Length: 292
Image: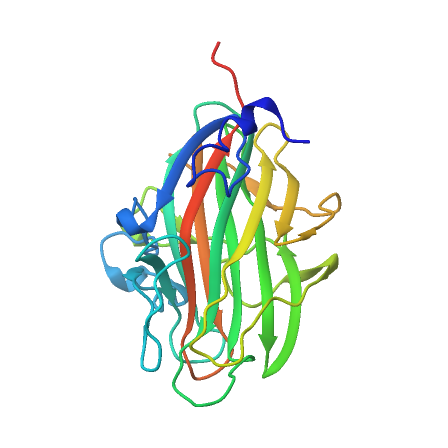
């Protein structure tokens, strides 16, 4: 049964398709613009040559009205535009878009979206195994630790449909990117790649994929996390709710200068020599706290 707090949103046609916690932190409708989402530039000091190789594929997201050669403009779930994140046209190329927050109180948080995952429609074939994966990564830090919950849906691997939800807890080593003049405050690690993923127990799910590669199907996604315990609280896609009790985030000691960090990062990954596209119609970030 919905809580009284959530029932208050039902009269709002934009919010009623979500199920937010009591406090809305951000409601990003991309028909109104980028809403703070941007590209991830790998860390560097003194020269861009210090950017780690894994970040060099990453580029700026765009606003898209979903134009295709056969259907015209598809539009978004609820408006004209969605946020489009595109990989490079090579297997396992990863791109991402993120919004940088800081949190005002450690509390339960929740991220919801309506998304579509599509390959670039360059052939008159279904192309169902060309889109590799999409995912959500949070980048969090309190006074003692940096925590990175990783979730992805692996659609295809080496041309084979996999259709499983996965998580990653294996720590990627950090590298100093400041050179000899650095004070050790600027480091980097590329943790979005294809290695280190583990299957979520019971995480197989076949998503709706329509009959030609230009058709969109919008899906609902929700992930919950508790900033107090730094643990997963929920994971849902469409009608499936997954058990997150055994999931672990990536953990490491706190880094310099990142107190109260709260980044929301969406990723897309290719599985072929076609680009893969992740479209986000809107993203709702909510939390549950009371002011002192």
